[in-house]
Length: 295
Length: 295
Image (cartoon, rainbow over all chains, first blue to last red):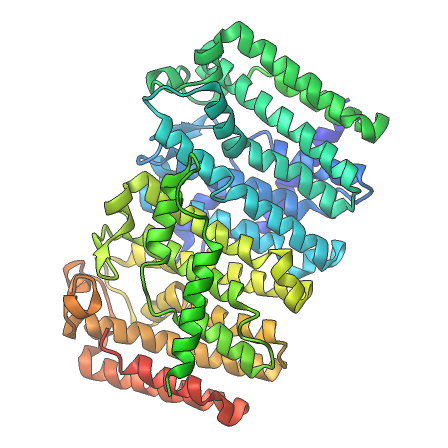
């Protein structure tokens, strides 16, 4: 029943390879190598999957919107590269491999992040791809992406994270941080899919609710796995939140209540899909699967 | 005769203030403060002026395209913030004030750069502004902006710069670096103005030639001022290129030949404007003024 995920994922991998600048040759080959290393370094590709499937549910061609699906992954990857830098979380491992700056140095990693962020918008605004869905929808999708990634979204969440380390943080603040830091881009994935597919306001709103709920659940499960998981399964060190004295759902609620909250959110996400009928079974399954994941 | 520059510049300052998130309140106020500090911290606003004036020359309303003019300045400012970071040029001063990371710390400066880069594309893709020029032109302008800022443009130029420090660099390599690092965004400014104004291919090509020539001249004058200027006039330390053992037009050609090259490029730029007739006198004057500047 996961066939659609495999299919989408393999098309995303191919499209990422196609969109990236080729290896070597240019004087700036260093930054291209670093971009390729991080963008092609694995990952669940959840955001592209959401975009493509919501596009299909709204009547669009999921393969026709692959460039936007990949733009999401470029933004996600840039945020991981910058987040791992010494002046941020100073993480040496990511997705089971050395983080970008450990391999290419800080300066090139910084530039690779900048280049991937920029490439996302280059991809999203390419008139050739826009011709498939029309300039109006392409522009709206670009706008959703930028809003989600910027100061009121992902970057804002990072800033809240920075300013909350080592001090007492309430559950409300933690939720606000996660809604920005990881939630905004996941919501944008669903919304962009709907917009590119050509949806009704009712469907856009249902998709936003679904994505908001799985985004938060995803973060809670992340916090739980940081305590209960293994470095081997996760591809990065565990107990890192505790070591940094970071407030998490687990530190505020305990593992048991955090698990119950993740389950409640997953049920909420599944319920939000009602308007899409049986066609949305793949997304129901995805929500369950993310809540139950071990890595 | 500089009245148009003053007028455009003051409108750009107002528009930047309008587009930026307001001070305070939000949990992520720190990054907003840093964005405001750097974006409103002065500068010549050359790129916005080019965009607005080429838009006017192509029959568009220069004030109707202010958001795109400001988007250019957001990208320019982000590149300065990241360029000043310790892992890059490690500069403490910028535009006569402490650089962003000296005031807000490295992590917040990194995020402020990320947020400004993202905000440029949020602004460029905003459907409300696009309604003024049409989605098609808005999307094309966004695409130009992204191509100029990315791995084949500004970021690529930074990478060439990184990899060229401390080794022998030919004049051709130096030119390629500058065409990417500073030239690409200046060309994009002119091209976006033409595209948003609704131009003929002939005018777009003339504008590209003009901007390519003043962009390179601008960089050569920068290199000359680093040797002959004062820190007071420039608002940043002088002789920095020499200290870093960086190849420049001055180190490769000497001051005299570098000056002649800047003048040749300025003449070339002025000549490229012929297709625009007497209407382009403001841009002719701008080219002369940039070549003769002392800061």
